[in-house]
Image 1 (cartoon, rainbow, N blue to C red):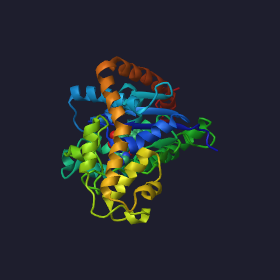
Image 2: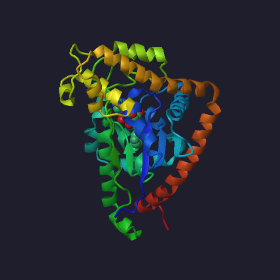
Image 3: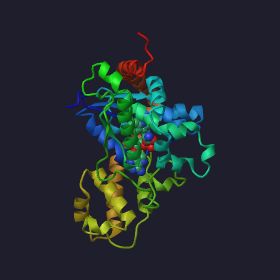
Image 4: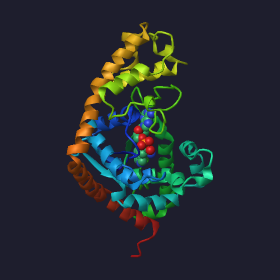
Length: 347
Ligand code: TYM
């Protein structure tokens, strides 16, 4: 039996605007889990600077992403909401975990390869060790559940490997400290679930929806207004066939699969049910319904983000300050113990 009580941790980078992929892949689960679990949601500003950020833009993005968290329905009374840089324990633990993780493990990370591109020599060292900071985010709270989109799966597996290796490397110290089952860091469970764990570009169903896509038509941003949302859905790439009536018929049709997944996630229904309703019919009919649904679900979030950006900045800053203090109160004793286990505390 594990001696850890369930605790949720997850985060998003404050670089650019949040988009539908962030919302459907992660945020919907974050919102649901705050009703049933102790939850810690982070704005990972230290991860953001693995690629250079203009300080003015970064400050703005931290506030904007926090405003988006709140507008989506995260409740600071239920969840801890804070920005990573304000809790120094993340950086300290990341260093220790850098010394536990192996070069070979990090060399296998596909996201580094994608983000570093052709010129790996020019990538920051931070970008390479990005996943160990992510492991520190999670392990530093003894988090047990991590709701994320599909693209973070490999990083989560790495965090689990690091937890196991730390427990092995320091097994003697852990036993001497009286931790009976020898587990100081629990292995966090990825929580990747729902009909849209990997939302694809609206312009190309084989590419992930992302902030870095040069085409704004490729994604729905959470701050888009109703007209923009409807326009982007109308312009979304499709194929000439009508929608299939069965899920198997989506195979090899990435755009149809993506749009039905988006519809299902926004409606809180299964893909089967969506196909039951729209399968066999014209794509244009489905697209109109999807545009209406997306506007109904997303436009109010966008309006609320804008309201907070203009009128409620002080509230957003207060949420982060309170959240940072609460996060620190959880991480500090775990780091104190970690320092002891590693051998930094002399008596
Ligand atoms: P980030 O900021 O890239 O994305 C935030 C969350 O959104 C999910 N996501 C998607 N889900 C489905 N379809 C998409 N197209 C899509 N794009 C993004 C991501 O999977 C993620 O859940 N390394 C993380 C942030 C992080 C973190 C952590 C997460 C730092 N520390 C600790 C969990 C626990 C990242 O860059 O996410």
